[in-house]
Image 1 (spheres, rainbow, N blue to C red):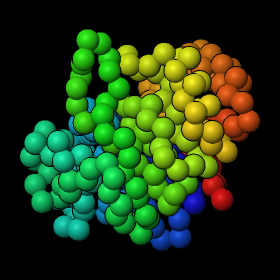
Image 2: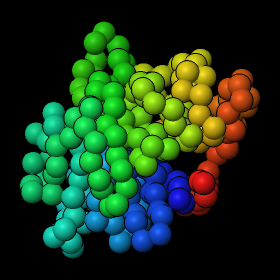
Image 3: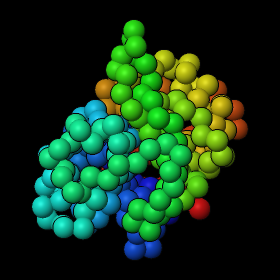
Length: 210
């Protein structure tokens, strides 16, 4: 499997002729959706869900589907029949990948906000994208996409998240608000992650996961 990093929280997974994209938002590049039939979206916030990009893709491809929390369907009526509701505890197949839906709630920012649904996706039992949450999945995963910067996140919480999940490897996401210095600062602190391999994937580049 090839994991390609796009802007902010967006990643693209490729294996043989299978292609799946997670969280193409307003901070990510439109080319992430090239040739894609199915997309996973963790929650309704624009940095994870760029409705304009997805509507454009659905107009080009009648088979295009977007899987997102059932509570988020109301926020994206423009997607029409392309939107497919999913909830925590479900297992389904998207673009030939097995997908387990976990979590359910967005991390609290302040005083109960934002209070919206957020699901995490475990793809093929090995890659975990948590969206805007620090939910620890019930089963081990080899590859963790760890949020790096957000109004709901402390650096120490990101470190504890990696330690709790205990993946073989971790790559940062949710980092569009960090400049180069901030990215280097976060990467340096991830040395406290224990036995997990950690690396940053430059935008548009990929790593191979076995």
